[in-house]
Image (tube, one colour):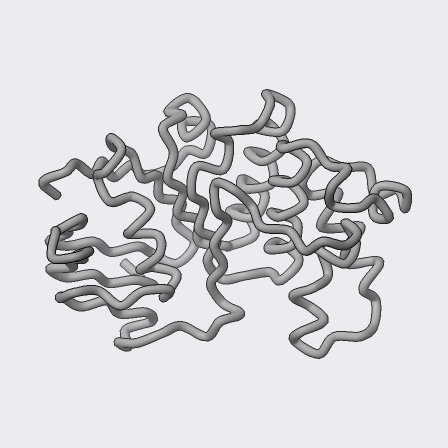
Length: 209
C-alpha cells in the first residue's frame, strides 16, 4: 500500500486524560476513510492530528514517510461549525488562493468550486454576504473554499450534522468528486447512511481506542 499517513502507537492527552489511543493506522493516497464511534471516542482529535493542528502526546505520525508537518496547502480541515470571513461569498471562497499569491482567474475558480458544491455559479450568489447564508449554505461555501485549493487531503468533521437534506446531498456529491479526482478524504460522522454513500473504508473508534 502506498501509505500517505502512517500512525503508530498514537496517543493524545488533554489535562492528563487520554482521549485517543490508536495502535496503528495507515491511510493510502487517494483513499476515502470513514471515522465512526461514539462521542468522546477521539474522532475529532484524530482529525486535528492528521491536520497537524496538534502534536500527539506520544507515538509516530508520518506523512509521505516523513515525521512532522505536511505543507499547509496539502491538508485542509472542514469543521462541523464552519468559520466564514465577514465578507462576501466570493471573498470567502477565494481567500486561500489570495493568501497563496494567486491574483488571476479568481472568479473562474470560484465559480467552478461553487458548482462542485451544488450551487449554480451565478454572480448573485457570489456577491451575497456571509450573514445572508443558511447553515447548510455556509457549510457548502466553506467546503468550496477548501476544494478550490485542490488539497491532497480533505478532512471532514461531522460535515452534515447541522445541514438540511439537500445540502447533505450536495456535500456528498462534492466529496465523492474530490475523491475521484485523487484527493484523500477522511470523514468523521455519526451519519452512517451518509458515510455509506462515500464507499469508504470504515474505522470505528471507541473510548478505549
